[in-house]
Image 1 (cartoon, rainbow, N blue to C red):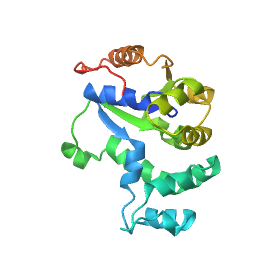
Image 2 (image 1 turned 120 degrees about the horizontal axis):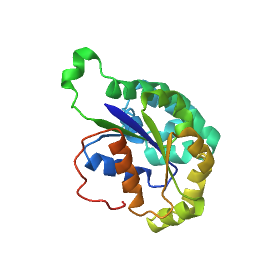
Image 3 (image 1 turned 180 degrees about the vertical axis):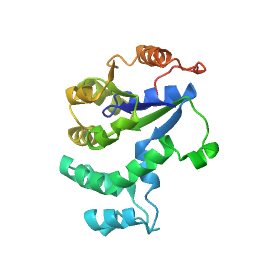
Image 4 (image 1 turned 30 degrees about the horizontal axis):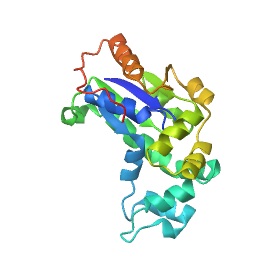
Length: 213
């Protein structure tokens, strides 16, 4: 199975790229969602997060209140690093289980030619890059991304806070093995992805749609 890691800052088009490849038959793994799935009430990771960021980050059921946690954990880059230090080791283990299943259990794993992993905080996950055949950066200028996010309903101040916690576009490019400029948010994003799929000789079905989400 070929594995692509997709990295990109908020409103860059990273998730659009991942969904497109999923429509072409890839197994899609959203690392943020995988992390959220770890937030089970009473789990060690939930207790560790509550101790670090305050017990009021818990909801009425004892799980994580994601709105409160996002406000605390993404207020500064240092806060994001504190959350990453708690979640990262467990997340890396869970990702490895999905990408590198044990031989004894491989018959239970759906067969895919391609796995696509969305990573929103790549700087803190660089030690996992060895699991990828390609690290694809989807990039766009800050003001372009800001306009997109606001058009989609995000508060401008919220975007600015989140963007401050993310790497500069040139730093993302330096992490990548393949770069897609998505400043125009047109079908060139999909053409670039198709060309990369073809380069690996993957026999994937065509996507039914090629629209930006």
